[in-house]
Image (cartoon, rainbow, N blue to C red):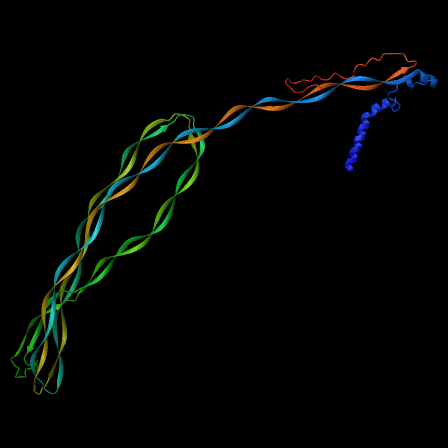
Length: 474
């Protein structure tokens, strides 16, 4: 409400200010002294004479007023525009590929075989026999005496000797050779530019995994080997009457004692022989495995827009040749030599001396009879057989392939674009305005013809009117 009140007050004041000059004319100049002529303000003698002499009136005057008008029109403007246009280009990229190549390798294969070997062993068979012996028993005093007796013992002495044995081993020898290979490349001679290209690189990553490996070791095993059987000479004294041993007082046994030697078969003590036995076992071993991880990288790749010229080049490609070379080696094989050494020993043999009351008795005296029996036995003897097996293997041989790759690049091109721009122009339009001007008339009024005053409007500025505009005069 307050805003509406102030708006109405402002509107009234503005209307009063605009209509003020017209009010002055309407009230005959009473409200304004500025319109009065200077001669009228001079003192006069008589009011009646003055009133009858001069009178102020108003007359209508036409004036030409130039009013400004604004006209909008459109004009064509040419702009320069830069735009990027895609262009397809071709470049040649060299790519390394691999082909599978088969080659044959002779692989030695060792096989352990066994052959059956027959050997003869003499085994002693002992049998106990009894013979009847007559003896005299005398009572009662016994006297024990000792005599020194010498005997010979064969003692085995073992000595380890070595003999040199020659054997052959096939050893593979690898030789690297080269062959000449021709390939084609493209050569360009122009201005070189660079662009940023993403490419993928396979990066090796090493991982370890556990693998079971068949292996083994040599263990030393001790075996007992029985000793050889030899014949030994043992002195013997056979007395017909056992009660007369060592005495000369026995008349009944006189002349019946015989002394001599006899051969006895004795087996020597055995020996322990050490031999190596292959014991297989499985172990776990860490084996490195390489896998490739793709990694994106950026690099600046040169490119040219020109004609490609083929050029033939040569390069050397390595390949491996395997051949088997026979190599002679020697090794020492141990063997044991047994030597029998005679050793003399002494011992105390007790004998009893007594006086007997003669009594003849008989008894069974055991004695052992040894008989040698030959026995055939078999054993398995290991030996190694080497054979060569041809094995086909595959290897990767690299070669280069040139292939075209299409890519898109952008070129900057300039072109003209027309557009319409709005423009505003101000020009003046004449308009006739009527206003009242005060005029002094003296009585008696003389008839005069009022001439129209010349317009006091200043010459308006020259307005340029555009051709083809839609603006008109009012």
